[in-house]
Length: 109
Image: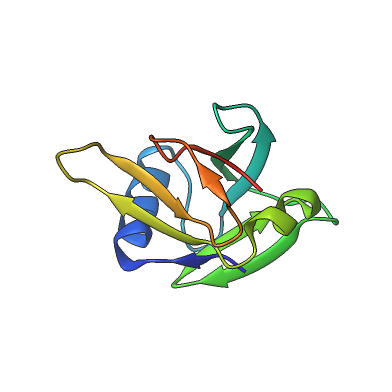
């Protein structure tokens, strides 16, 4: 499961609304793909539907879908949002990552 912090929930709802999605019925798709300076990178998007093999769950009022392969890399991850001086954006606090890059957008196991 992926946990969603309060600050991330607020930003997700805001961005979904701006993009024409409904946070009460639509999903945040979280995934992992090859690439980035550490080998794997995070992928975050909005989706109106999910495939039968997707993992579907909800935390803090946010409906999340994760493909089966990515789920293995993301179990226990906390999705946060940082709006500080050092940069703005979603932050994945992934307990499975053994190494992350300086920007926090990629990781390796």
